[in-house]
Image (cartoon, rainbow, N blue to C red; front, side):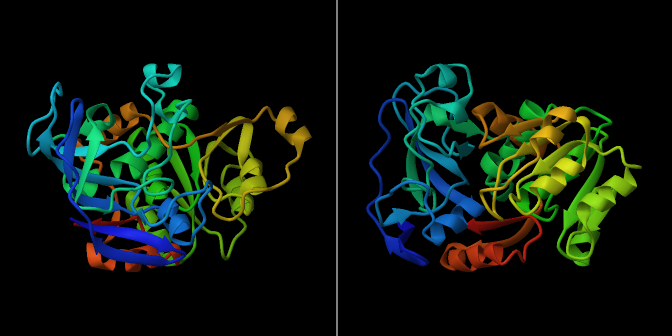
Length: 340
């Protein structure tokens, strides 16, 4: 099989590897059809792993594929089913796993494509318990965005921030993969959406998705604009994933008792904050990482219902690095997908 393996900082090679063995009991073999790119891929490409990893390593943290073979004892799958594998090596036995809080596994062995071999290969064997079947109407390209692009947003907005119909929300980086998904999910339940973008072209595209108010953060202070537009009341929820550059401005955008949910720190991992502001305004801050298996199922159901992910561009496997560079340069609106 062909596989994309990272050998070092920005050293990504398309290689031929032995096919995996046939699946054992409780396993399925998946033919990977599409890989969606994320900033985890960019950080891995740059050599920025949070833990030591063994190189070379197969890239790719999010994918879709179809069932090619089924091991003994596996039920609920058929040859040819479109599926989405979960992106972490969870134990399946700890309390968090048993309760369906997969992204809080106490014994997680790593994230595929970041700590251990990932999905950018033609064939992979996975435990059936970590594979979600997609509705037949969902394409490989869309399904490839379910585990992170949609699942992360589903977990942030509804499990953590508890976003309710009719509330107001500020979505940072509305042109990103998760930003576009957040706009769609919030508008689907009747929320008023404020979003930040880096240029006017992205702003027009964000409006076309349903954003009510678009702020170009390069020409305007987003916190000032949100305060002005909300008549100094602020928003109910801030969807934060930029990091240090926007953190304190995001807090200023919240109304009293507002909720901030964050899953990223692309502009920096450290900041300072006003603790008096935090407790006097009674803010609630939620850290959010990844998603659960249930969130992937919910995301696929939304896709089947017509809420498609925004796909910026599609590249063949041979141009994986080009897709990463496009994402790293922030020249995207939505997701970048690589097809195999």
